[in-house]
Length: 89
Image (tube, rainbow, N blue to C red; front, side, top):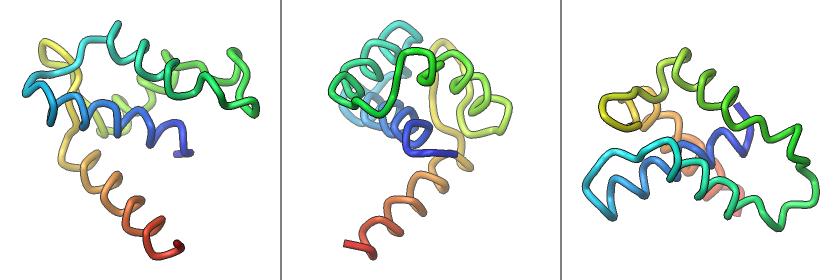
């Protein structure tokens, strides 16, 4: 899992916090592209958002029930990574 996978998990979590609903695929993709718009290290081919979402789903990090939401495993992975980054800063 890289920073862009974590970004997807963060987008899903932020959407849930702000709107109290699961995020639809179109909104997830739109928010992902907005966030990486200025990232010159990532090309469109490398982003592969569909593959990333599928891998996160198969790894049990997200689930789709009338929209995407984090699983317990996904929340834990995002929290662990956030803590690791905070300790490095």
